[in-house]
Length: 334
Ligand SMILES: Nc1ncnc2c1ncn2[C@@H]1O[C@H](COP(=O)(O)OP(=O)(O)OP(=O)(O)O)[C@@H](O)[C@H]1O
Image 1: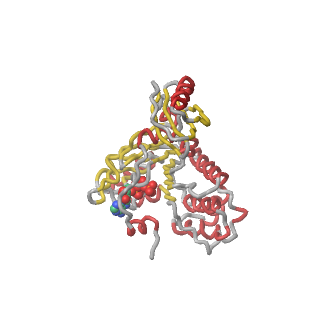
Image 2: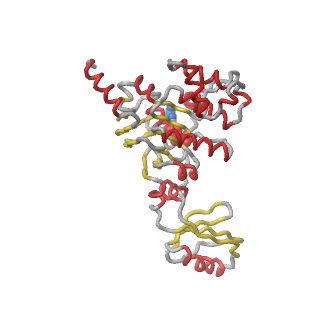
Image 3: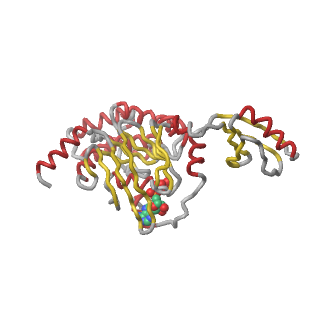
């Protein structure tokens, strides 16, 4: 590419500091289309991507972070095309996969310093100190990472990822395996990164967290984005109330006008009803007529979980387990 064109692209990158622009992005693995013609535009927000196992979330992130070549389409990160300017793209972003490399034989500080040096950060020691402070690890920075709790390790991974001042942050399941308090803390840090101007692209299986912390959410299934909106607007897609009922005994399907069966969950049945309060006694009567004892009933407004069920159902990835792909993605050997 001519120098002027390259300069134009770099100048554009400076202007579009933290945007992710995805255009017709597609990835085929043989006959399987893992990501199908994705179009998205993400800015300074916490953008959640939800989908069942195998829906294409990791494949999307791997393409956006230049670790996997798209089959078709492209994307720009901070104005840089992922295929034409992979180096500038990598300098603009950070990616925290589920299994990141924290060397447990090093201290917290040494782990971050190593990343600062790998990235060629100016004043690496100073920058390391700063990110350790931001992530509330300064007090324990000189202890070996092997004695850190799960939440501290996750924060250390974030510190490593932040040491070169990325504009865009990709997080794969940032709170998986952590206790409630540690999960809350991680989300507080993610929120404050957003307040400081960063764009966050995050996958999670925890619907309640996506609901509470994401500004917008994309629901993905079989490589396709089914819906993108704020959690509030997504929940408004289900205009009905959700009725949960717990019963004792074998039952047959019931027929109540304005009431639709949604799913059975352990010992509870879930229905959608146009007017939940009105439907409650009618549902109870329908079961009582069958000689079924109703133990408890409740009505609530729909959650993101209900939207997910409504758009995706309960499908599961049935493609065969691929060991070499597992090792590639997780960096495991052996
Ligand atoms: N290297 C590969 N070779 C062949 N098929 C692959 C490869 N990587 C992923 N797939 C398939 O592509 C589809 C999407 O996988 P991907 O890992 O992107 O989904 P995911 O939504 O991230 O799933 P999970 O929530 O389990 O991490 C799956 O059907 C998967 O089996």
